[in-house]
Amino acid sequence: MPLRRLSAPVIAAGLAASLLSGCAFFQGDDEPAPSKPVAPVPTAQQPATPAPDTIMPGAQGQAAGRGPVYELPLDGHITPPVDPPDAQRLVGQADAQMEDKDGKGPNSQALAQALALFDQAMARGSLKAREALAVYYYYGRGTGRDPQKAAEVVKPAAQAGLPMAALIYGQLYNNGSIPGGGAGEAQYWYNVARRAGCAPCMSSHQEFLNSIEAKLNLPSSKGQGDLASDPIVLPGIADDAAGAKREYAVLGILYPGWKQVEQHRVVENGRQLDQFTLENAQKRRVRVYFDATDWGKPAGKGGPGAK
Image 1 (cartoon, rainbow, N blue to C red):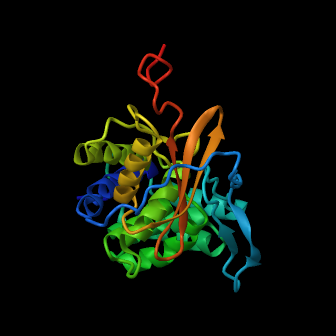
Image 2: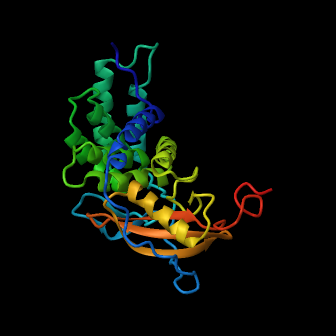
């Protein structure tokens, strides 16, 4: 059966579906939620420092000739860097080799040429080429299936915040292809993928949020929680104590094994948010947001769904 070209959206959708099916490790993890929920601290007492909204080059610039070092922001949208022009040209040529021709897909020669062009682009600093090559190694398309090679190739692109690269890197941790990180590392990279704009990742994560509502007996929620602009909303909360209890229950499921290092009440666009900073065993940190604006407000009195 001929190989058809895997477009980026198709690959991302497939991996995101795989991500969602891999969420069993959350649902089966009996790790308790972080202990002793604490009422959020008022903004006036502990204001939060805004995080940068883009990827900033690391202080060391070039690392041992391997290209720029990128420091991902703790929260906010991630804007990946753009490939150099000559690398973009090579990636475009490689993509052209993979075009579906008369419904037959690329032949073995075209596939080999595409992989060679991606290699050349990668040597010229292309992160998109790394992202593409990782897919071929991950699935064994035109080359032997080699998850370890995929991890090696895609790591710099994931660290720079390319959404599919981060998704693949997280999946490799999730399925054990990369040892030593497990679920905690997987969740970090899934978070990066969502914040970098991986639409299938966001939809899969929302499905997962919906699925844990039944397990935790929580009201329906919405929002990813990755951004202050898209917090997790838990309607029907009577007061801060009830809200904190449910927040910790959700955090214990979404980030099993992570520990809380900070909690603040912040105000964004007139909404009151609980901002949690969590850290995994590898010392990676993420922020999770909950909307606390309507806690204690009955529906129809300024609460969710009020006209």
